[in-house]
Amino acid sequence: MVKKILLFTMAAVISLSILSCQKENTPEESPDISPAASEKPPENIPVAVVNDTEIMLFDLFKMYQSLNKNYLQQGVDITDDEISNQILEEAVNTLIAYELLYQGAVKEGYKISDEELDKELEAFKSQYQSEEEFLESLEAQQTTLEEFKKDLERELTVSNYVQNTIEQPEVTEEEMLEMYEQYIKETTEENPPEFEELKPRIEQKIREDKFGKKVDELIETLKEQSKVEIFREETE
Image: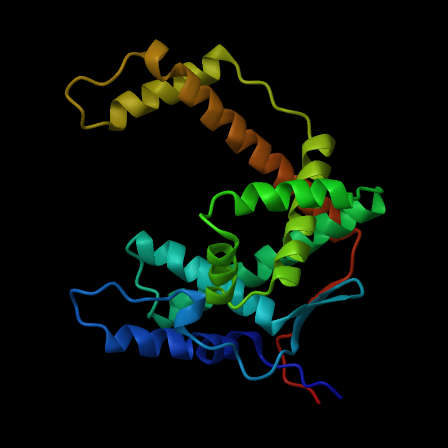
């Protein structure tokens, strides 16, 4: 029987090579925490399950590394045990939320055609100078082309589902003025921009915040309709 391991002890397992790499860097160097800088965990075991779909340790490893990189760029001490556990918990919850959205999309009949997938793949490849450079990038991320295409298909499916399920929120003039006034109170700029100059950015920020909250509400609804389990205890 597959062994289910304690979630929070996995931080030590999947971050070990990352932290080792950091210790080897001099204070002047930025630690390399890219997927190529550390090895995958030795065993790909389930860490959670959403309905009948298992979330695997390798996927958690990649998400954990990605979040680590983001927080490191923000100046967060990711070597702190408490912070490391919080990032691990965030990684698990992110993967669960994404799986809930994907399952919701499939249930509603959303599907990406081969033509759509190929078009998006070619658009992504166009960011690189050559096919070889693109494949080298995948290799550096310890990802195969097939894995990348699968992730891209899921991403497009979820995106279509979310965009068609949630209406674009409205933003009022009052809300924008309130945010601008808050900005004026907090800014240290001597000559801050006028409201009209910042209005498009303020509107976009408020709209994105509202949309994000709606996405969170959708995830919670899907979660209530699903069976979600995170493996937190050791059992044989």
